[in-house]
Length: 256
Image (cartoon, rainbow, N blue to C red; front, side, top):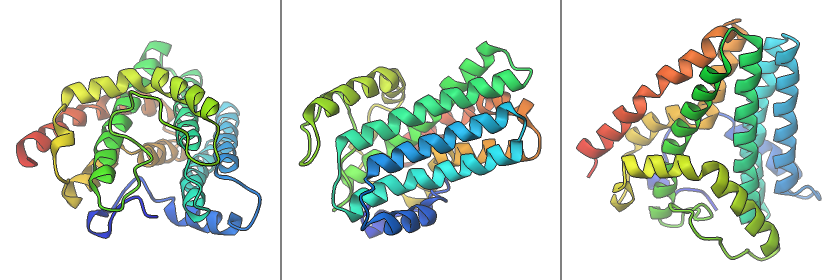
């Protein structure tokens, strides 16, 4: 099952790891590896990237950050191949993402001249950027005929576990998910509370929004690390947040 119907697919700048993710998922299809195992694997790749940053192996860190994006695309692909969608996998993936994002920013803070307060602000900015992308993308997925609806537009209620997963685990992970993402979701919903009423989003708009996708954010970090520009990462993501209001403004004035 594809995340989107054919007519709703767009050029996603943050999804460059999809080809690798499909290749990895296909290689694991007939094995005992589950999507949860793949999620754990991208977490390990992120931790290796942090280790490399701490030792100033910035090119290696960039490699493992990009690898993390590729592996991150594989867990969902594997779930679709094995026809084993799960809320526990969906929430665990998101929780790992936000933990790694925080650790990346704190490591960058430690290895650069940024203060912890600026690093914390950059982390908040990155999460708001990613939340805007996810907000519009999940709306599109839920409106798309035959699209993936594992992710909900409004995550306020613990979902019922799907076949093959534990309700207790879903409840625990949902609680953690709402704790770490809830405030960011509320801010974005407040800024564009009527977006869910839109029938669909144009492909060009979603491509523009994908500049805020996690994959593209990590690509920017990887590029800056590769060129030895670690000092610019924190201020860049703070300034990059200006476009949140620009994108919301475009949605409100152009897309009705």
